[in-house]
Each structure stands twice: as C-alpha cells, then as structure tokens.
Length: 318
Image (cartoon, rainbow, N blue to C red):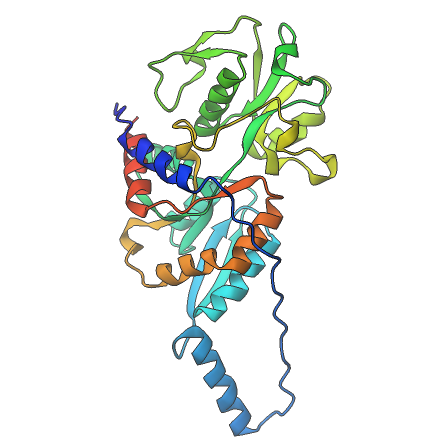
C-alpha cells in the first residue's frame, strides 16, 4: 500500500492558493430570439453564420455527461457550452454508482459528480481506468446536529449517521476525529475503516447510511448528529456551515482527495472537446450558477490535472 503524501501536499498547496472563494455576480440569462421569417434563405444563412461564430466551427460537438441530479447549474453549462461549440446533454441517475458504470459502458462521454477518493474506490474495485480531466469544487463537510450545540455535548452511546461508502466513511472518521469524538490510528492511511478507530471514549455508535440518504437522518429523533456536506442538507432547514459542530478544513491533507472532478475513460482523454468543456465550467456565469446551487457551501478549486491523476493513482493503490 502506498502512503506517499507528495501528491496530497501538492494539491494542498494549490488548495491554499484557491482558498478564497470567488465572488461572482448573478447568471446572465440569455434569451432566445424567435426567427419568424420561414423559408427565407438569407435568414437561414445568417442564423448558421451566427451559430458557427459562437461554436468556433460548422458543427457543435455533442457530449453526454452523467450526473446525479437535475439542476440549474447544468442548464448554465448547457447554455455556455453551446457558445463554446458544445452540444451538452446531462444524463442524471438516482444511484450514485451508475454515472461511472454508464461511462465505462460508453453510454456517456464523461461524468461530473464524484471526488477523487470516490473515483479511486470505484477504479480499484472494478479494475477500471476512469481518469480526471479537471477539478470543480470541494464541498464543505462537517458534523451537524439539531439537538446539540457542540461536539462535547454528544452523550454516551450517541448515534451518529455517516455515509456507508468507503471513501466518505473514511472522510467522516477524520471529521469525527477533528471534533474530538473519537481517534483514528496514525497508520490508517487515507481510507481508515471502523477497525482503525483507536479510541472511542463515549462509545459513539456509527450508523452507516447510503450517502444520498444521510441528510434525512438530520431530523431523525434517534440520531444525535450527522456527518455530511452542508450543501446536501435540505435548504428548507435553514442549516448552513455556520451551524456545524465542527467543519472540515478544505486545505488539509485529509481533505485534498475530496475535490470533485469531471472525468472520462482513459482512452478518451485526448478528445479536443475537453478543453472547451473546462472553458465552459470556468465561465463566470457557470461559476455563479454553481455558487448559487451550493448556497456558498463549496470552494471552487482549479487543480493541475497531473496532480489529480497522481493523487488518484496513489489512492487507488491503498
């Protein structure tokens, strides 16, 4: 098992330089102009000319991208992508494991939903080679409770809901360690398991729940606290990162594997469409849409792709 922290340190350095979140204005909505003069050749020619100028070519490049939920953020990507020469279609799945399966089976060209740690677990378990293209954000994760105002208040035998997938379960252990709730063995590596808990003085019970359902446990009277991303909580609850008992440090070594990436199959990384797609994601209107969707509970990150791929390789070996 590799435990070389070099790639994580490099990523941390870049995260530190990006720690200050961009403040960008609201999305500029682009209205569609209806062409009423049907059958006029000159009008059709002008319309095609305008499309070519926006797309940088005679045809738009079609891309199918897998994700896990429909959102206004996707609408902004589709709109701006068209200006950059891309015809983007999002294929959304309820099951968070299916976007990778769809990519492997060639049903989509890329996906945009997972962090590097999740991807490393998928690649390792399935002997696949899905590869990052560029990073987007790191969501703000923490320990939240509707009943307690501080981690020290969690009682003996408190039940804490955590995601059950290996990558996010490990992430939860580090957050609980930061909160002083339990301790993780120093030699556990990036992916500690329950067996790596070296101290649990209050006999906290970890309740493992499907990642996409942890948010529902926040209001469960039998659950004392939950570990998840602040942006995963129902906005109607009015809970933000400021309400967390403890927050993950997005610049820490243990957080660097959790940068969300756009990824594709290794045999498709030379596709010239990816440069246009990254340009689309970096557009001010798209970033503003992401900020709005995440309610400010995420940090925009632009990490070098070589660092992302080195980190993926190291994590997959563990």
